[in-house]
Image (cartoon, rainbow, N blue to C red; front, side, top):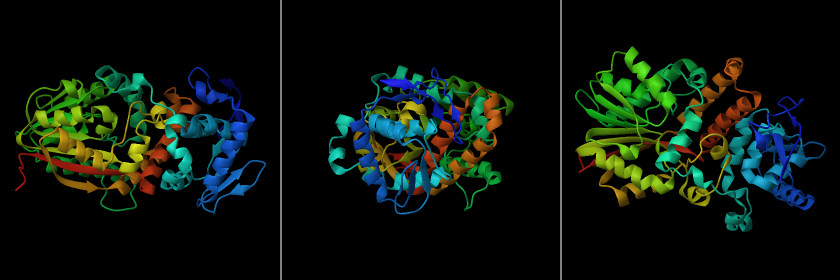
Length: 423
């Protein structure tokens, strides 16, 4: 049971959260004194050995030194963590019950030690205490449409506020660091061009793109002379991508369909899919990779960009309901590199030919998005997104950036061939 109570707003002022929009942020879960005490003991033990400074209001500071994390309301913080684990940790941030001068730095430490935060005995009992994924968020054809819509149909105008002019919502590929905003569009084109080069997309290529985004890759392929069929489940993305195709005069070369990958038909010389597999779910990875295989002509090439995580961590958390699932990407699961290659080997005729990792580039991409989003907070508010949403989105970007900075997450570009077409 949860009780609605005032929260501590960002900046320490008392405020309220819209309980209709954010019920589990507005309400603090009821937790017994014993549960809170056990949670506090486990949390303090976990944090005391980390290179962090965790300051509990009205109490002491634990940790070995490093980035500061301030717990402003320890009772509510422990109630949420003790009831909902990492989901509660994120909700406590949305409620303003904890904060950090540099959230990315603090979250990077936590991400780097993710495997050790929960004591081994509790890890073995994970199935008993970890929240389970809702059945309705399975990535069936209908479930996928609902899951995709909850994120990508939020508002094209919202995404345009923090993405660069290419509207690319995936990792860029920079020439070097530090990355700056004025280099982001070129770095996104570099990423796209590298994928198209891997797939050998050129004049006359029949290209299937699974996951349209807002159309930049399709436009770039069409400029090379390819004929592109691009699939999306997002109504909003499709509408804007079609508008961009018309504005570029590429309607004769680009077709954008509102279509599940499982419903794709035809044969293509190349297939490209950018950060789509993370939305598929482990249950449907075989179907996804079989689609790449079945749609690809003999001698064709698949270029895939995918976020990955360590295999052991994927196995440990694959059935767990996380803060990201609840608030950002319902139904998602980041695969491991091992899972990708095993699925391809066991369910397709595709041959892994190349893999390149560039996780540090994603960290920089996310930093630039986060800084842009923060700078444009008034415009975000003008679109009708409240303070809690803006805090949630900032946390999502910081949380993701920390994953890449810590090495917990990586991003890969894969090349798969059919009938060993590489010479």
